[in-house]
Image (cartoon, rainbow, N blue to C red):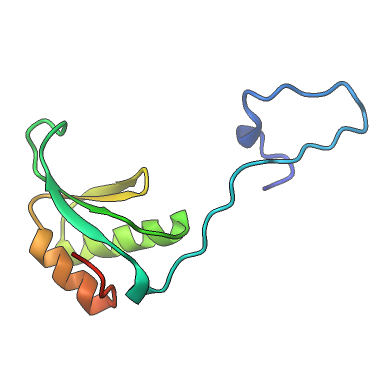
Length: 112
């Protein structure tokens, strides 16, 4: 964590002790598994999305940075929009089989 990053310290009560040292107790991110050991699941959802079809990829184990990189790769290969939220990759449209094929060619062999 940066020394003066005030956004990470919002809603924190500070000590009046002049020798107080702030220590972040956030959870550490789990290291990213190898591509061939990632248990990814590809599903299609419509519920709660305003009737729009979205392909959801769940089960990624690793850092947020690696998840964002995978999401960006899949969005560019499919040529559609999407996002990465709450540990899931959301790709717009019904792209299930195409995403499974892309993930297999990228080395994610445990994709279903």
